[in-house]
Image 1 (cartoon, rainbow, N blue to C red):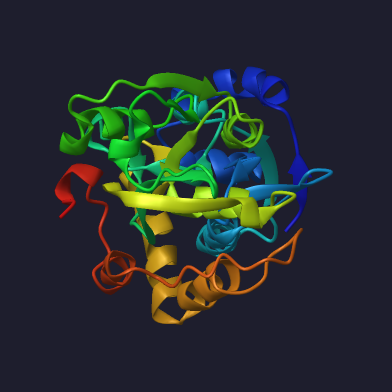
Image 2: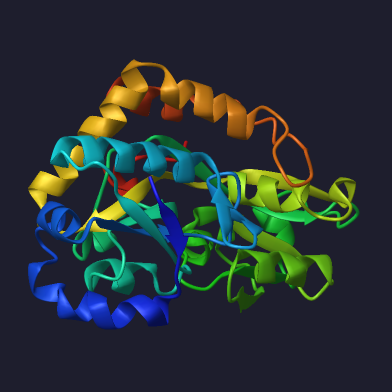
Length: 300
């Protein structure tokens, strides 16, 4: 399977040209011999880059296996994978307009987003928490009064802070990073007191920092969210192929092995382990595959 990295600008023209047929993704892939895979620069162990156009991570590997199954389903001898780097801010528009076929990052499945795009069945259920400097004295949401809180543009994390009953009466400053790396840099440099986001993204950012011991993840879960691979809406044939591949990977043990590899063993480039065993909610998602949105999960 041939792989090539491209920029959003390079693919946008051709994507717009085929937008009329983008609701039939399988036909588009068969005609072009190409899958457009949305990849992330820094989404924790789910998806990130090692530089020089090399991408990796749990969702990245799941998607690589999905693309192999798509090739077999279509009876193609080979399929070229073109990487399209996406951000939290542009990922949904790029899926909608045909620039990306499979977005393999760290996107929360929500009711609002389901109005614009579809999601594959969930393989990772996340808790939104906060990373702080170890000497900050912050251990709970209630400690954020008068502090500066950062999250990444285009994510749902700050909405969860605002809506959390424990945040009532708190007065804190909100800032945004353009991507997860930028958000962690704001924490690292002292311009933010807390970085609120998915626990595994926070754990990955800490593990890959220059001094991991200087940071820790604290506080009660602000939300529980299913994180899923994103695809275009109203394309049931493509969703079925993607979900069938996911079901196969769960059944043959691939998902469990990949989870252990990325969340419980040392990972590059720092060879540090996140030490995050699968949560009860993640295991339940494997046992009963579904694409339910975050609103169906409750924080105790």
